[in-house]
Length: 593
Image 1 (tube, rainbow, N blue to C red):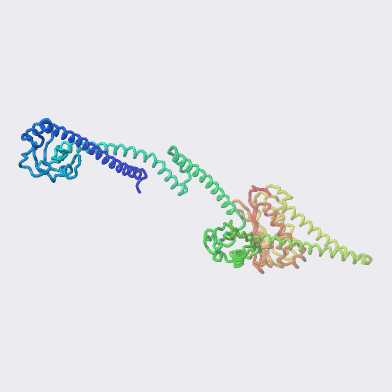
Image 2 (spheres, rainbow, N blue to C red; image 1 turned 135 degrees about the horizontal axis):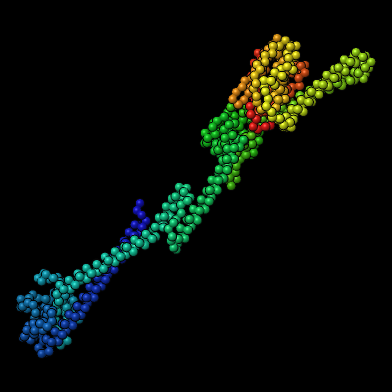
């Protein structure tokens, strides 16, 4: 593609060439005609002067010395003179012998006078004899008001044609100089116009390619300047708008990427336009692969697909709970709503999914807790009330029976006291009501001193208790809480290990942590029960734990005591084989709970 200034210059030069050529031809032709007219007038005047001189002696055409007179007159006139009678016979001529000359009646200039009766005749023709053109002027010779002949004056056109050729050369040179000048002016003018336009085109191309920093730098005046300013304003406005759009896009992307809720954008055809990271985690797939896929092709939830189809079909908001079974079982609160175009047509739907699995689990835990607390409180209260009523009904009279009933009332009230105490203690730990008192703790000493308190219980069931060797291992923590962790775990081990079993306690020191490993050969815990054993009042063997005096809060308290030390607890168990609890506590406490 040629540059714009070349096309403008070429068009301008083409137009100027046509104008100059037309003007040159017109001027040359005008000057040629003017020159011919002047020569024609000059020859007519010469013809009249010669005719007057010939007719002065009144002999006219019949003078015997007519030839001599004509030759004499031509010496002072640089023209050829010829006298012809009305029949075309040459009577006198200054160049040739009239007797040898042919009849001139058919010559154009003679015919114009003799036949057409014009005042003068004109003819310009090429002479083969002379080798150049001649201009012939003829005027009538009148006698007695009758045309008696013709006076013809002729002039060589050789000099005139040379003058005309020189005129053409001069005009051509002038026109060529004018062409060059106008070409230079046109090229400069074209560049002054095309330069800003080409820069504007370049800026427009850059704007199309999303380079919003491009600007028209050339300073122009008039309409081009206004256009350049308008393009710069447009580019600035586009840059500002695109920056805002990019900023909003980044904000939206950041919000969507960090949302805990899954977001899915589906068009009217059911194809996915957008999915955030949380949605990918819920469906167990990479969300970047969702784009342009049909919603039935991603995830493995028929319930969700049915809700999407229903929302697309009806155009109404839908809210429902959906169960996911892949990649793991979840309960999801799905909220689907259509997004509408300006004309009111449904353009697609937005699905927002909240994982409510933990909420539902906590609701169940809360419900179980209320039920368990009610049940745990009901038993001792019922016993207290029943035995008190029995005593009031007359059993106090029997001293031995009264003592037995009072002993039972004391045990049940003691159990109720321990239950309430454990609940309050657990609540305090959960709400950080009891701050951690950091001190240097010799964990081996803490474990051994705690084991002394439960040796009697282990001995009653003939259980073998294996304790760690005495070795100084120090950590930062609260000694009472560490001892309570060990006490609760050992108490559970004794409670759920049959007679003749074995309980072992070991301590393993690592670079940054210390592990307590407490194992037993007890009844074990089923795999399905393991995720819930740290819940409050949750019992694997409810009847047996209650008979053992347990409140069902021991492991819940252990879990919170471990968390307060920024540690973690693991459990491994095989039903009928035994259970192992692994407590890991950091040596240094950075963030104290």
